[in-house]
Length: 473
Ligand code: GLU
Image 1: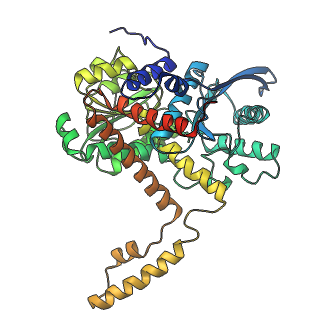
Image 2 (image 1 turned 180 degrees about the vertical axis):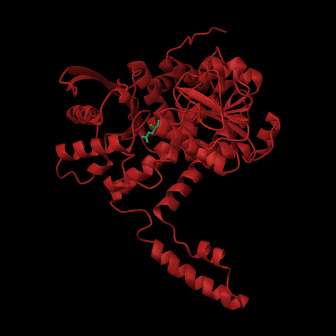
Image 3 (image 1 turned 60 degrees about the vertical axis):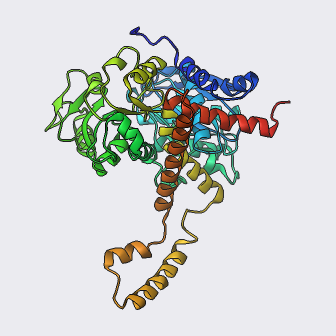
């Protein structure tokens, strides 16, 4: 197998699409339209650096599909951003949204900078200028295209975006819905920050709860006790590790760009994060050993491997050395088509990105709905439910002739708050998507892997929208 990735990222996505299209009944024309990137906006704009010099910044926004409005997808800040990458990521957003029944088209944005090399003030100027370029070309808006965080961006950047948008669109009543992943104080929703990591956990947990699947892999049912390796300690990696650990899995290694830490008895992601904040690096984290190379973490003996950083990290070169039984793709595109072929040969189950990391966009959808409705989830019904539950509880106690124990009382009484509703909506979404994809896979013996089954699900859902809407002139 060649050491190099033979396909560009966008070509990899197309290749996986074509592999799955064979298992659908759609005309070639419809398949071609689903696959194509509808709009690519490439821009350059100048910013003045803190030292007074002028720098020209390269940036993109790609709308892969407008079969539903608005388009949706994050914005990444990375020196590796290029048009092909943004197109691939936008395409993945289309399929991701379709699979989890989030009614958006797919989009993605990218700014070609290493955020570490810029001051906060410079980053703010870049983000605001990028936003006003999007406004000028009608590439942003609650009903047009709604960005969100991605690699290298977070709440801070989203609040700059919403502020810039609102100042350019005075009086637009739904303006807060022009971007998601905002801080709560700027119209964000509780639960968005951890959403992708929690979704990864819910998705992999559902797979681990399937006795037939676990039997095939030679694993016991359930997440508890499973050895997990996580690549990446960003928002997605950190939260994935947190939820796996809190539910009884053992995080034996965490890899970052500057080193990988290993401890067979488990690593606490919060301690590691605090250590990195204090020292600026994960290197020499107390109580753990450093692996010779950070990429060695991917090849460790473990049950579950969670790549939660960037694309193409598992490819034809290192896939033969992967020892994990399950790969949970928390990042977008971490495994190449060459790696997929090797997983099939080796019997490794790869749980694909395009639905496994859909937790972020699912909760973005909840945030967008909140922005359009202008009301916090739970505000109307929480107190009503609690009053009702109190009365039911009183009846039960009367019948029982004794009080219900305190812990149970609290659980029964509790009316749902925003965070409860967001988490339960996310759990429901991830469980349903996992089951739907598994059903497609198992009901068609020709489908070689879970990624292909996920694509089949996505293609069918997008194609139905096109044909039922009679969108073609
Ligand atoms: N950037 C995330 C993703 O790749 C979230 C996108 C969104 O919330 O719109 O799925």
